[in-house]
Length: 87
Image 1 (tube, rainbow, N blue to C red):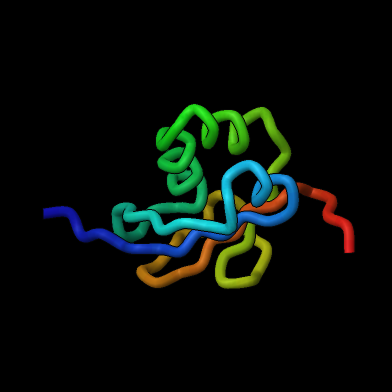
Image 2 (cartoon, helix red, strand yellow; image 1 turned 180 degrees about the vertical axis):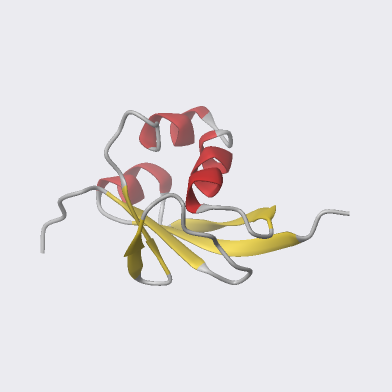
């Protein structure tokens, strides 16, 4: 039996406009941010378009900028946002 982690996903700026404020994602425990992104890309054509590998998207794990090799833990918050956001 595979151990699952449930994480909260949040979107900001143009990604929020396209996908909403956020959602939850169940993923294998110990998965990386990159694997979480791939799982979201597989959710729908809209997710695939907005989070596509060719697009510049920044990530933060528990409010700390990270790259796609960072591991997510159960209960973590994963945020996606464009590289430049207005303030």
